[in-house]
Each structure stands twice: as structure tokens, then as C-alpha cells.
Image (cartoon, rainbow, N blue to C red; front, side, top):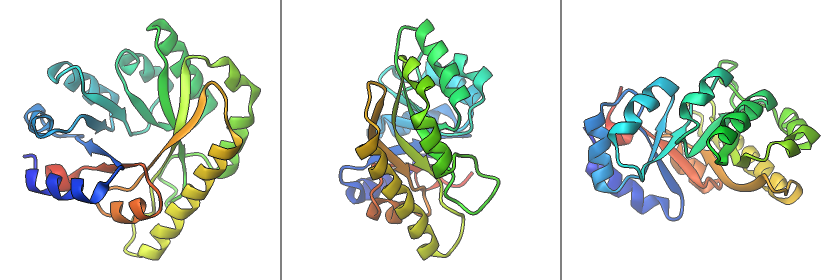
Length: 219
């Protein structure tokens, strides 16, 4: 069930920060309740689940793929996905470009940066991201646009560690804004912060937060 009161409280905290309602594993009726309350941005972890839900919701919904994405799954979301948060290789960008071309659209993407101490989380190191952004092959991808960065902090009670990880990502984001500008490089979005740490993320410069359990209840 969508938690309307929690949604109202979060909106008051966000200011200009965009709310991505993480709706993974939740039924269509919960998403519809959220939509009726004003939510337009929904985040899903899995391609199959996003594709199953998309036809059942209004066409002005902005679908965000926030989970790990395999190159062979891009074709399923290419017709409608609004923003892919989890790009972690040139190969994946090339696959997104190829599928975007087929649908005569440009697909916006974020580079996922590995900022947490857990090895299980995906993402590029800062150095790997720099190498990707400097790769001349990127200029050939006319149907993708890198709009910013995404990161997930370590799952820990240590708020100073979380703050340090978010702060480092925000510094790298500003570095990218200043140094990487091209027709398909437009650093505007910094997606960081979830239900447990979104307040820290906002304080450190997030432009998007991905919130699930506070809005939809625990999974």
C-alpha cells in the first residue's frame, strides 16, 4: 500500500531534488495509488518487471531502470525507458545506442560509480569512469546521452562513512561537469540516496533520490 502521509513529508524535505519512487516487487495497484498522489518517476530493478508494469500505467510515467542491466536486455526497455541509472561499461552504452537508434530516440543514462565498500555492488571506479569518458568511441554514440552519475553508499550505521562516500561522488560529479562537455555528455543529475540515507545524500548535493520502503512499505 502506498504511504501517502510519508510521501507528503518527503516532498517537503526534497526541495528541488527529484523523487524516484522505487516500486520493485510492488503490485500495479500500489503504483497506481502513487501515480494518483502525484508520483511520475518510478524506479525498477529488473527489466522483466518494468516491462510487465509499463503498459498498465499512464503514458506520462517516467520509468527509471536502477538495477544492474545486461546488454542483451536493453532491447526490451529501449522503446520507453526514461533514464538508465546503472551504466557501468562502454559495451553497455554501445548496446543502448544500438537499440535507441532502432526506435529513433536518444536514451539518457547515468554512469554508476562504485563508492561502497561492499564488493557485491556494481559500478565503475573513478578511474574507470574517467577512461570511459575520454574514450573516442563515445563520440560515435549519437543516440545516448550521459546525464550524470549514480552511486550507492555502503550499507552501514556509520553516517560519517556514508557522508564521505556521497561527498566523494559529488566532487567527482562537479569534476565531470567542468571537464566533460559534448553533444552526448551533459552532467546534470546526481542520483544518490535511498530510504535509509537520502537526507545525507540531499545535504551532499544529490539531484535525485531513490526511495522505496518509506513510500511502499518493506518488501
